[in-house]
Structure formats: structure tokens, C-alpha cells
Image (cartoon, rainbow, N blue to C red; front, side, top):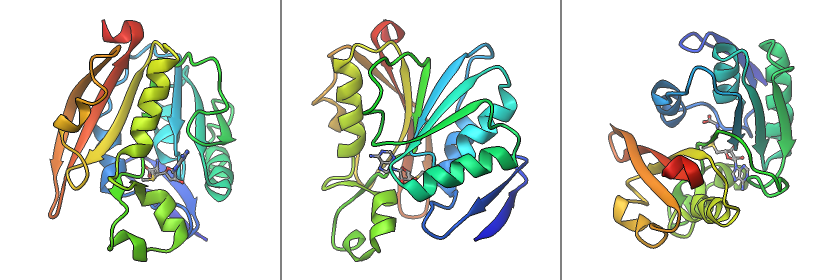
Length: 209
Ligand SMILES: C[S@@+](CC[C@H](N)C(=O)[O-])C[C@H]1O[C@@H](n2cnc3c(N)ncnc32)[C@H](O)[C@@H]1O
């Protein structure tokens, strides 16, 4: 395992090979996420190395975070990286699938830089640990849509910030679940060499009114 310095975020992280190494999508999210100054509670799904919540915790000292990852290795790394950066008292870490173990959904904001690539001939060649980090389903957005439908049905009052890739998604794909107590806004687009990334906010319940 190697320790890396991320000067832009002013943090250090230990990252083993099986854990997602912060990439363009991570920094795109960090740079463009605008949180309210007095926000009290944030949940992050799929924390990976922990970079997003650790960065936010250092900048929002009064905010509490709950971070999940489906990978036990990632969960352990998030915990130790929180200690390394002195924010462990602000961040709870849980190994779970999305937010499935939580019945009372009360955070003001949920963040997920999810696996968003399709399961195709290219991605099928990846090792299993990479698949978990990168593939979001047969089309690519199934994992995140499952969460959106869960948030709709649980009548949560929250906003979800997430990322899609033009390889697997465009705004029209949202029609199948729109108009049922959820409002979508594309916050920012990032053109890369082979794809475009979208940072999207979904507002649920009172947040969408
Ligand atoms: C693209 S990586 C993002 C990691 C980190 N947040 C970042 O931006 O650098 C996606 C993360 O989601 C996690 N993940 C995948 N499916 C998940 C699920 N169903 N529930 C929770 N985490 C999941 C992966 O293990 C991985 O850490």
C-alpha cells in the first residue's frame, strides 16, 4: 500500500490497489459540489478511499458524515484515512450496499460517485474488484437508478449528487422515472477525451418543491 498526497484537497491517503484511486470524476465532483454553510448531515455512498467526505469534513467542521462502501477493504481504508486526516470523530463508516441498512433517511445531502459504465465486451475483461468500482449494470446506470427509486419510495426529503457518463446515459433516460416526486438538475458537464461526465442533482420530497 502506498501513501499519496493530494495537494488540491490538502489531504494524504493510503490507497491499496483494490480501492478506487481518485480520478477525474472524483475531482469533478469535489470541485463542483456546492454545499450550504450550515449543513448538518451528509451521507456518502461508495466512499472508496474516503477522499470526498474527508475533504468535506475538513471544510465543514460542524457537519456529520456517514460513509458507506460495499467493499470491506474500502471501508477499512476510509476508516483509517479518516484517522490519518484527523476527521474520524466527524465521520461514521459502514460496510453496506448503498443505504440499504438504513431505515430513517434524514440527511440533507447524499453523494455518490457511482460505478457508471456498462457491462460490455470491454468492461467484462476487467478484474472483479475493478468491475465493482466501475460497472453500474448492463446499461450502466441501473445501480444509481435503484437508489433513486428507493429514495422516491421512502419519501425522503434530501438531495442526491451523482455522476453519469455519456457512454451510458443522457437526460432522456431519466423520463422513465421522472415526475414521481423527484426533480433533476444537471449542475455541470465535463468533456473528456472519450466521454462527457455529468454532475447531476436529484431533489426528493420537500427538497424538490
Ligand atoms: C467510482 S468509485 C468512487 C470512489 C470514491 N468515492 C471516489 O470518488 O474516488 C465507486 C465506489 O462505489 C463502491 N460501490 C459500488 N457498488 C456499491 C454499492 N452497491 N453500495 C456501496 N458502494 C458501492 C465501490 O466499491 C467504489 O468504492
